[in-house]
Length: 203
Image (cartoon, rainbow, N blue to C red; front, side):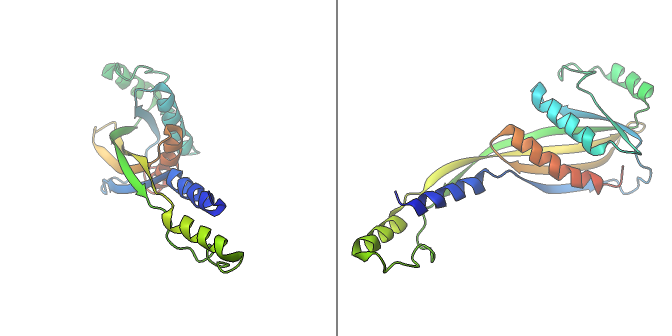
């Protein structure tokens, strides 16, 4: 197969494989003026490895001079058995005034057909050199290169911040991540949600 065709295929695959996270919507309680001092971080994810990555990733984003974020994984390792009374006692003990939850609300597969190239200027730049057979081969490869089908996983995550005292939502964001590898999807989500959290005005 023509070397350039291989290069074009690899380039397309790299572009498809790149993780991207988009913020679909953001809501904030505009009546809230006070900033949060200390928050619990809870990733509603059954896989403990993914939960660890998300919770500690958000903790690292939020922790600073004026705020301390606390992951819940150590205190509540079983996501199916979080005791509300225990959480309430811990909130008072640690001085928690907010809870940040990240929850996967949807995951779907997007099938994408990537067609073969039809014409590239660079490919045909020297199309008259090398004799008739090279001209034939270049033309055949360009117009008859097969396309291929790939699948993209789209993960929709809702990130919500609650006020402990009132139990009301202070802020929420919906993000969509296109990535097939969970670790890369989490990294992309964290990078994007970091910017949104910094702009929330709550920290």
